[in-house]
Amino acid sequence: MLRIATVNVNGIRAAHNKTRGQTLGFGDWLADRGADIVTLQEVRAPDEIVRELTADAGYHVVHAEAAAKGRAGVAVLSRTEPTEFRVGNGDDYFHDSGRWIEADVPLADGSTLTTVSAYVHSGEAGTPRQDDKYRFLEQMAVRLAEIRATGNHGIVTGDLNVGHTERDIKNWKGNVKKAGFLPEERAYFDRYFGELGWVDVHRTLAGDVDGPYTWWSMRGQAYDTDTGWRIDYQIATPELAAAAREAVVDRASSWAERWSDHAPLVIDYDL
Image (cartoon, rainbow, N blue to C red; front, side, top):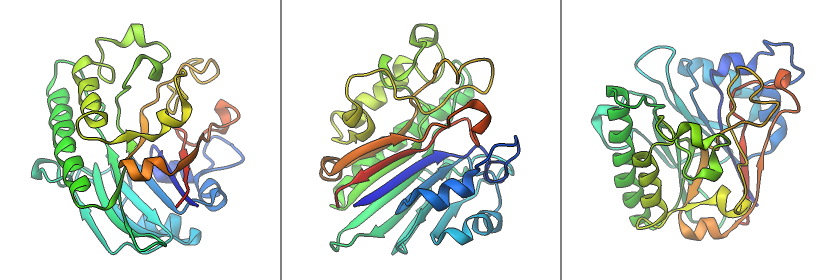
């Protein structure tokens, strides 16, 4: 069994520290969850800090730090040492943005799993931030096609900052004109899961239900009322997706026990 977990940590140092008095932090979760591969987004820390905070968990670490200090940052942690890693999605405009890293992880059967940790822009409708988001999503389509053409297993994980369908956002009617649920954004996901042939593994396993959500605002009662968004994904090539057996959102028992505004998405694959 291959267990893959992905989570936006919202700052690895804060997530690792029990800053709100919670009993568990990111380090405890990482040590106890038993994942073979863990991908992180919004790491927001220098490389040496990332390695220091994950050293005791027994993973090989590849990390893409953003040029802008305290922003973004993505990482792949794997039990098996990657044979190769690449920073960026192929568009030089995003090379030092800390939003895309790939690691080729050898599997037990001799095949290779190209594992991506991606952190898509949140965007803002009608602004240059949204233009950057569309450019990133367009390049993501290019890279998805390229990865699939290699013949390797492929998985793109992370905070993709788009709810694909009405099932993915509790209050979808109030967000149809806002970044994260714009028709133009959702159309990219139609393309990823349509002509490009990738599979939304979590949705496939969960079925036609609301959520399960992976992000909730830290404000108000959003967490207590489960007013969330499903914006953290594991999207896979068809052969890998067919091997998926179970998906779990590691939702904290209460608001006070959260170490991020996102919850980890953990999926087991029969490989």
